[in-house]
Image (tube, rainbow, N blue to C red):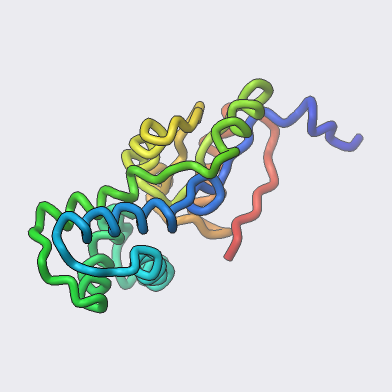
Length: 187
């Protein structure tokens, strides 16, 4: 008998970065604000893109075992220094770098995200499914008004999302007695 997904589906999880929140514009806004306050010139959008471009290689280092499991906050901070150097930004104190790194906790949602998640939440459990660490996703949810019922991050399985590690482990922990789910993670 085929599964009637409308009766069987209990929870819907969402990728967060780029799907629910606009990381590029949010980071660009923070970088531009910092540049104005500190008196240097930078294209915040280019900076944001360069910073995020270092994310896949950093994740590959974790997935390959070159780096042990590392929270996304730490990976972002590791990647910040080379981007600052690339853009010739030397004026920042360590406290300012840490605050800029926390900009990932202050990302703004896409205009329809909160409304859409709220509508889905009327019928299903809604949650994040992200490589972000739990504190990052919770802080982002509070800032952006994201109505998660559950926050599933990479710390739960102690692994980043892949088809064989983090995603299936998170899926199993989220089921709570519901039938098995089919999940697919983008490469």
